Every structure is written in structure tokens, then in C-alpha cells.
Image (tube, helix red, strand yellow):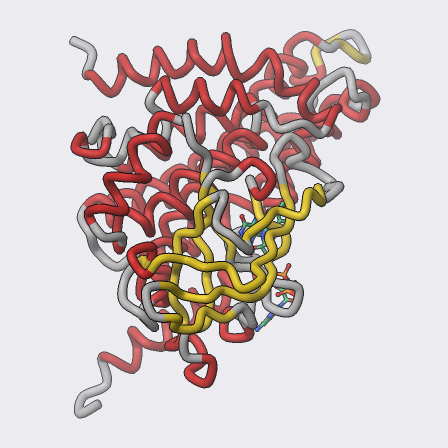
Length: 385
Ligand SMILES: Cc1cc2nc3c(=O)[nH]c(=O)nc-3n(C[C@H](O)[C@H](O)[C@H](O)COP(=O)(O)OP(=O)(O)OC[C@H]3O[C@@H](n4cnc5c(N)ncnc54)[C@H](O)[C@@H]3O)c2cc1C
């Protein structure tokens, strides 16, 4: 008998084939966010897969949700990335730290895809270095007064609500950060309309948000005041697992195209899949996809059980993203000239793969996190410390 998860995966494959895949190439070409596809993903249940039913979720577990992201990434990594910005980076903090009133007001529409969310942390002067955030939220009685600007924000121009990282205690570094849900229509809050022209992920919207004395109600505070970093520590590892899933999805698509081509394309009187140098590329693709999938599965298991996952998530993201760049590069190689042509999706996969080494923390930052955790684990075993 098939499990309900298998049934969902099969219907997800149909959803992706019928709804996501047909528009992926054109959306990339036109650099247009396919908003109808995004909303359809909400109706299908992608955004609510991991959230509980009281907010309209399906309560199927985070592994099912991340599995859906991986499935979508095989057809359109841009849509998968927009979905992760919406459902993990923005919705998860609201779920973890929002007041019950805020959750009831925002989550159902976000889960259904009727409303779209963005997560706004990065600034012109603050990327990897979160402590350098310059946006401030100052106390103004019933409200916070928000001032600053955010760049490279996914969904910026289409968002109905943005989860904004700001300083409430500027001198306290990362311990002075707070998260605020800022809703469209808030006086002093605007998307500038700028759309980043990007190497890849071109069908995702990337823009700028500006806050000029924006009046944000106190009830829109997510978590405790100055407690934003604690929420980020639970959100960012989850998003890194999702980024690993996107990298794996991209890689799986590239590998599948390579296997088909290795069987169908003949040179020197035989299929190119008979040449050992081509076989080596296929074997390495398969082995590294399996390894990345195991790293992801381990991270998801920790997430499901509520255990610390910073190191496991960084390992999964680091390995999967570097793998995706290598696999898509080799996939073009296996295809020769046809791989270089825009008639096939391989060049798009290659461009999209590169983002997975940058977004949600660069590869260098993942290595720092992994090494820091290794050292912490080691020090914890020294008696008397
Ligand atoms: C398409 C796209 C979508 C994005 N979406 C969002 C979003 O929705 N929300 C959001 O808040 N942000 C978003 N970002 C921003 C993204 O999270 C940042 O780009 C990323 O965190 C890196 O920051 P940076 O670009 O400022 O690079 P920098 O931090 O300036 O890093 C530049 C280089 O220096 C290296 N480096 C920096 N510090 C160290 C160190 N301590 N040790 C070693 N090397 C170091 C980095 O690894 C990198 O190679 C997006 C970016 C892109 C490209």
C-alpha cells in the first residue's frame, strides 16, 4: 500500500509538470516572477505543508515541505527560491515568535498563497555580518518607528508583508536585533520598484525596501525585543536545508538530462554513455546527489525532532550547493554544444545553481559555522571547562 506521503509526492510531481514546468523557461527569459504559479503552489499546499492546521496548514512535517521545494526546484529553481523566502524565511519567524493575534491575521493568507511574504535582513553595508545592520526600530509608544533600507530582498516588489530585521539596541550587536512584521500600506514603508538584474534565479523577484519613519504596531514584534537573533538561529538553519533541497533539485534535473543524452547521443559509432570519461561524470553526479540527499535527510530528521541543527544544516547546504555548481557545469559538458544552447534548460540550471552558494549565507560562512561548531563540541569535552 502506498503511504499518504507517496501519494502527495506523486500529485506534487503532476502539479510541477502541469503548472510549474511549462512557464519556467519563459519566466527566466523575461525575468518575470510567475505570480499565478506561486499562488497555485499555495493552493496546492506547498507553503502550508509543515504548518499546523489551526493556521490552515497541512501538518505533514517539515521533511514533506522540503521535499516539495526539491520537486519544484527540478522544474523552476526561481519559484522554489521565492517559496523558501516566503514560507521559511518569513513565515517561520511569524509562526515561532508572533503573537497569536498576529499569527491568526497573517498566516492563513500566506499559507494559501493569497498573500506573499518577504524576509528583509540584508543591507548595503550588512551581508554576512548581521551585527552591522543599520536599520533601527525605536520605541514610539504604541508603535516602533522603523528607519533604514534593505537590498537583495526576494519577493520585495510583490510582498504583502515583510519580516524585517532591525536594531532595537544598536550598541548590543547581534543581541540588539529584533524582528518586525511590516505590512504593505504601513505609512513610511515602500518597495522602491528596483528589480535586480541577475545571473540566475531570474524568475524570482529581487528588490529593495525602504523604511522612513515607518510606524509599525508593537503587536507586530516577532519574538522578544532584542531577541531577534534567537529566532534567526532557528530560521536560518531551516532555510539552509531548503537551499540544499533546491541545489539537489537542480542537480537531479541536470543528471536526468545527462543520462538521457548519454544514451541517445552517438559519436564514434556508439552512445557517448559508453565512453568511460562520460561515465565518470555520470557516476560522480549520482554519487554526490546521493550523498547530498543523505546530508539533507539527516538535517531534516534533526529539524523534525527539534534538535540542534546548525552544523548539519550548514554541511548539507555547503555540500549540496557546491555540488550543484559542479554538476550543472559538467552537465553542459556532457551535452557539448547543445548544452551551451539556450534551447535546453542546462545553462539556466547552471546560472541558478550559482545562487545556492551565496543565498542564506555564503559557502565561506557555512564553513565558519561548521568549524565553530566542531571547536565548540571539542571544547565541551574538555574536563573542567
Ligand atoms: C538572488 C538573491 C536573493 C537574496 N534574497 C535575500 C532575501 O530574501 N533576504 C535577505 O535578507 N537577503 C537576501 N539575499 C542576500 C544574501 O543573503 C547575501 O547576499 C549573502 O548573505 C551574502 O552577503 P553579501 O552579498 O553582502 O556578501 P558579503 O558578506 O559582502 O561577502 C562577500 C564575500 O566575502 C566573504 N566573507 C564575508 N565575511 C567573511 C568571513 N567572516 N570570513 C570569510 N569570508 C567572508 C563572503 O563569503 C563572500 O565571498 C539575496 C541575495 C541574492 C543574490
